[in-house]
Length: 238
Image (cartoon, rainbow, N blue to C red; front, side, top):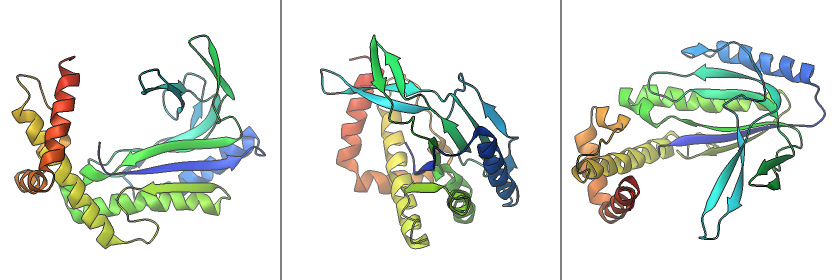
């Protein structure tokens, strides 16, 4: 849970593996020039790569769904560390199998039609170090993604903060305050109702936690109580 930027990079089916490597390497050079905390070396993806996974939703009889992971077959990626308490960001392109086996079934993945990468970057907790630090991290994620457009890729961005596509700092500030309040209120309520269970969240380290908790509890009291009941039942196995 937390304010994030979700994204998908799509390159189609025409590129060779060698061309993809060159393209991802060019994107890495751009990242190195943005003043981020660190950029990893280029990583060649093998079939057991634990990240960059797609998934297939498998409906269940109770109305829920099981998500079946689909690991990439091959590709090239790199990791960007944006700043303190901002989630790192995976960038690159991978190829995925057209089908995956699960429980004796062969399921279509809908991800085997070209080079792609789908992921998300949670920026919310960068705000523990002030608005300017958070804004820089959040904007850098958007800048990194938009650079792929100049390389000929299709880029899909879902910014939970409302900053993109209008680059609205006002909308982002409002969304951040709202989400910090929700998470602080929920974290505080869970601690009060923990019954000996450990409750851990970065929001507890926020320098304005008490104010955020009070504001969030006032604005979202009913929803917070409902969430605590559900989470408590799950944690206790009821």
